[in-house]
Amino acid sequence: MAPPEWKGYEVLRDLIPSGEFARTLMEPMTPRYITVHSTQNSAAGADALAHAKGQRTGTFKTSRNRIGYLAWHFTVDQSHTIQSLPCNERGQHADFEGPGNTYSIGIEMCEHAENDRAKTLDRTARLCALLMVEYQIPLQHIVPHHHWRRIRHDDKRDLGHKNCPHFLLEDGKPGKKWQLFLGQVLKHYKTHTKYDAALVAHQASEPPVVPPSEPEKVDEEGAATAVK
Ligand SMILES: [Zn+2]
Picture (tube, helix red, strand yellow):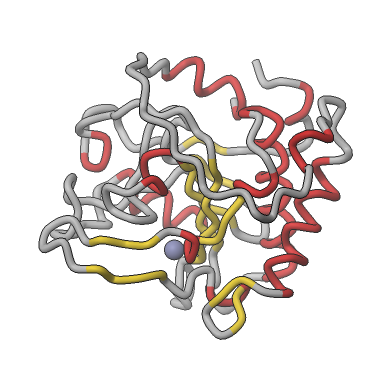
């Protein structure tokens, strides 16, 4: 059953089939960050449904990472939020074998021409706020893809920091637009009954903390409770 916090925010589930494509390994994850991306796909019809279907059917192949497919948790457009991976299972969307994939929930925002960006941003900000509540993720752990340095898996090449999501960055880096987006997240977060001021305490100088992974069991049903 969905917790009350999620009431009014519909998440459609279109999971990649267990044991197939990007979910061959189904590696467990405790989410500690949220990584925000944009699809950089402006093709007509490249909406959330299309990206979820692509993930479910094994379309997003790559030879560069360990599993052979790209995978992220949620895709958001102006009218839909669709989940492709359980939140307690790791994806392949940020930095190959780095902490971004090991510890973060990946969200892709659509940017096809017919999509309304303001609505997409607001839906994404609201999703981030709900995930903050659900997984006790602090505001400063909501990061743009740019945050993670990418060392490619197959040839160990250092690809640096990606300009993603490009429309929330300035000169390829987080600035005023990113801060405005975090403000939107905060606005939604404060509407929740489980609002916890400690999660939004300003700790600008905090170094990124990446704790060691703990063995744990993936509980698909448990993961589903947040977004049923
Ligand atoms: Zn990205």
